[in-house]
Length: 308
Image (cartoon, rainbow, N blue to C red; front, top):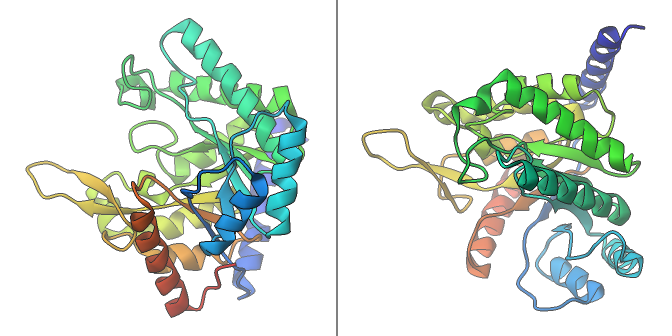
């Protein structure tokens, strides 16, 4: 089978399997998680704190892949509390205009991918990066170019091929002003990377980058799951409010204070083939995370979605 035909086959069969699961009417629990504020390096204490807060998913505690004793302790402690390690964040610019910074950043992502594999995290996640010379995630006209897309394909393949993961996925988070910027461009990226270990980390707020998507965010969310469902391994939870001024200005806010349709978000999450983490992020205090968590719990209860 030719490569292009194989890609089409994989995409079609993956989507068909997910659609069959969704159409079967069965729902799975959603694993809610978020940052914690406990000052401890003890994996057992950290895992118990997640459970005390009602979390069944976690960001990976600080570690390096080569520290096998600590990594094994983390994996064991969180498994004992039935808390899934949702992600290892990389969060550096793999497309930095400075050659040496770009090389160092890519190596760092490889190291983070190694940790995700060692710890059994659902994914290692980064954004594709930016050609902006001063802000690592900032806007640049070339961020929507074929050059950007091709370089991102190369970077994703490099990270995956260096580690050859069997337990985790490498994922790129969509951004509103660089590729992938929505479900269609992400699907194109999946097919181009052409690696089983490449997955999707979905942040629906990052996809809502226009008035149309904001007004119709329920449809936007459903479209993301319809097209990307077979590859989604973890998600982020936040909200968006429209700050009224003389141009478009969306602002991240605590879940429940914006317009993101969490009924649709949670419903779609519950129809994925596995219990999928939904991770709160970008808030400032424990109180803000508690407010966001309670909103998600309330919506989940209203629509009959179980939080693991």
